[in-house]
Length: 559
Figure (tube, rainbow, N blue to C red):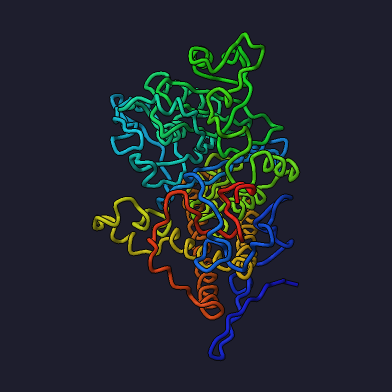
């Protein structure tokens, strides 16, 4: 017997049931809540209200202090700890800018082709753009682009998935103050987005991606906003790679094996061996130890080990403490307790209310498969904005186009408030923007999360479960076409599958939004903003979230 959950909104004698069956969804096992594993589920009861503290009338909002700048986060689970036997890599980008999906085709380039990399004088640490040679061939990849972060030139990316099965996540990793202060101006060299994009274009393995990024820094330098990292994985292993500020070309990388998990926020590396350049588990710049010795940050005669975080990291952050409601150490233990971890559980973690807020630009999950029958079936699951109220859509490498609703729009795009629309974009801009729709759903849901979040969670989990269960059928149909020599038809089929699911996800979002918006107005009213407040939050202020009575971007002891 099919189960459905009914919710109602009523007014002027009207009663409208909203059920999963009406939305074309069915439930198998009861859905997992979008807060997974043990650990704190709600803020202390003495500050809990029905509304999120980000709402103007919510209890306790004034007592919640400010936090630091928005930063990205990433999660890795080794293949021995997953249900499928494949590594999992997931994460979210935290940028004010809107985000849009892009599928970049495989290309061949002229021998003299170049690309511009680096930052301009508008960056928080000013720099100059330089040109470096482009590769003769670049791979196809799927990514989410955005238009603004720390003054860096658009388009920007935090990574994605390429046709070789290499997945990359960009994550902040602040360097110690002395390094930030010694960064030259103007600085030169590729920045975090350049490095992620170039590695996606050129790398056939995670290890090769680390080497490519390291060689680029060694040869051309590195432009920074204060220190950064990348979490990189393929079907065999993962790597965390940190690029330090300072203009000295300092970088280090640590291998993550099949029995390891990693929660990066920020990216971190601990102890490293003296022979790191001859180790299969570590890499680093030539001056990694020697520069630290010259600065007096490391004494090889002390008998202690070389700990990258203690030597080069932000000295105000303890290793694995993180900067969010749940520490890195706690989350890594949760992931171990969840083992064997599934793709669906990674979606749950990335959509967890203890992490996701208005700053979460999107969600991504990649299963890096060992049994992939064709490269076109490599899949990146993408939520178009914060995945607590947005569904993950499967985008396979064979997909040939992005629906206009998931492409670039002017909403939250840099300079949109001071310019008019380029006429070449008018048709796309006239379409609904998925990012905006699911942002609206987040705002309504998180205004009264106890009332509305459970039904949103149930609907999204049912939608994602159907897509996960359809994987085998989709792959069998696609492979029948590929095996028959009909590659074009196979790619057309994969494109139709993803675009149809994207449209269904948007339809689901609109159904939830319409119902919740009407009931929110009837039950609670739409609160008027404070007349003396700017609509834009101050840097570091708490943003909209569904964690009642608390801030996902602050540890519990700082709430």
